[in-house]
Length: 455
Ligand code: NAD
Image (tube, rainbow, N blue to C red; front, side):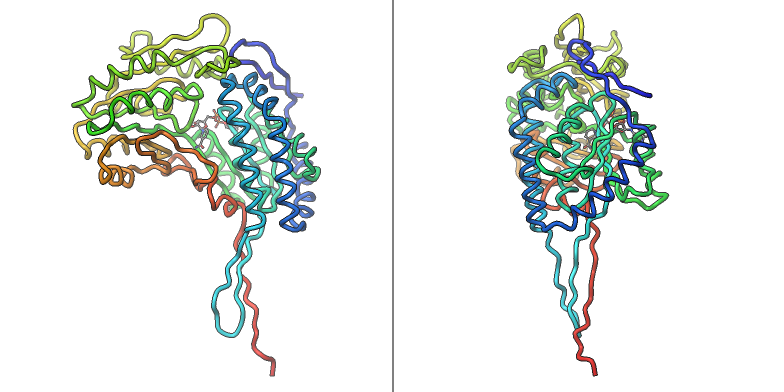
């Protein structure tokens, strides 16, 4: 019998031990889900919507409990964790309305009526990472449930507790038994059993590009539907005509939020050469004043990294001798702490090319707009990016030229549950969230009905 220890990354204390789901148990869970899905899809859309709104209300009632659980299992600052639990509530509310608005089309044809239906897929597997355990699970399960599917969530080994609690709240809110199940366990065992199961119609995977590629290959065997949300190495482009003070003040949050463990982290800061020195001068105090410490303290902006192994990975990008332009402070002693770090880089450096997934950014100068776009696109990834300029035409030109799914101008915002989210190139396949979120969980069926009078 396999078990996974859940460790508090800020204290290294054991929080819980969670039993892993065996492949036989995965099989039994898929069977229960198939049953539950048939009954769920047969309900009136209004009844499905009401049940999901009750689920949203249950999340809201337990928001503080869920947030505190995320602080303990993932080391997220309490302010962030409250936002994450609130995001689950809001997305459930938003998706619930989709159940009632899953509109088909009526297409003009001769001699009859042609209509389309959006049929649920059946059983959907959601494989979630550890960096945003609650929201990322919900980005999959909320629209999938609203569209009439059953969902099996495989949380990350290190952070299964909030997903397990959400499944309990779903039951208490009246979701049928078996409709939303959480199956903790190792990726290559539990996750793999789920991905390869013939009863699973679609896999929604968020995680590394390497694992995403394997999952896509497994899904190809059965032509299984797949949505992939993978890595990022996102540019933050600062033009000389921007409000440099604002751009520098906003930059720390863009790569330090969630201790940089964010696929949207703007970890490549590209700065026009004429303002490069001024920008770094302004960036330094902004980075050094970023509050790092006890995640339970509401004033904390940055907590620890998720695990000792991950800290070693992050450290490997910053050799002790590396000429760091800026190096912040981090608590000493217990916990997987790592200081905010800015490196002066060159375009081909490993730290400027690979996703570090820690509080480390690389700053690189550029000459002109053409070079900025070229550097921004010099990556296999294409998830998000920001650009800072006062020139509206340039803002539009560069937004269109950067090959990434989510761009922000004079801002770093990229994720709202009501706008679409996803990556270009090796950052993923498909989109989540936004007005079309449910369409990723349905098949379109076209039906023609002959209306000719029989002779
Ligand atoms: P990971 O790929 O190691 O693991 C993600 C999940 O996949 C975990 O639940 C893991 O147990 C499971 N898994 C691993 N091997 C598997 C297999 N063979 N079959 C089935 N499941 C398997 O990634 P991680 O380290 O947990 O997360 C970090 C990565 O996630 C980063 O690369 C980050 O950029 C990416 N990410 C992307 C987005 C996005 O929306 N694009 C969001 C968050 C994180």
